[in-house]
Image 1: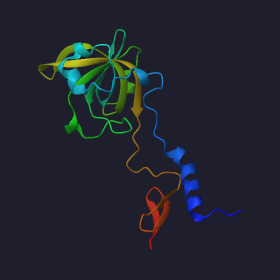
Image 2: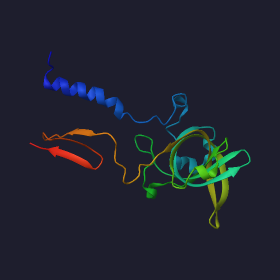
Image 3: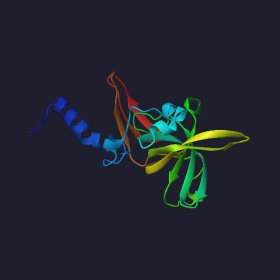
Image 4: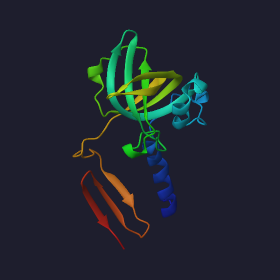
Length: 183
């Protein structure tokens, strides 16, 4: 039995779509607890009034410090994209925050510049020095963290890709090598 061409395309899309699914950043058990109505800007303005709320925050690691009962990670907050990954535009930041991980992380294992998404519980604020000036950092207790791995700039995907064009072209290839044909 031979399928009509349009059915073949639909079948191909259904087979390939699961491979395109985004990573789960927020664990299922934490999803119902997350308060999506509170913004980071609101937390910066009044951390005490949001104490106990569970938020999803993202950012770039600035510094990691060992504490007696865990690890403190200083972040430059960055807005999250639709996949809950921090965007790379530092100009869009609303400030800094501390994330406290109750378990010990060796500070050497988390490089400055690492992008992370945190599911954390707001816990007051902490005043510390930012250069020579006192700075009030909102503090969150880490419930879950997701480390985003960066692909090296010269990364070539080991599997081929295939694409269709709206204008009737088609192409295939992987990494830097692509072949295209248009009509």
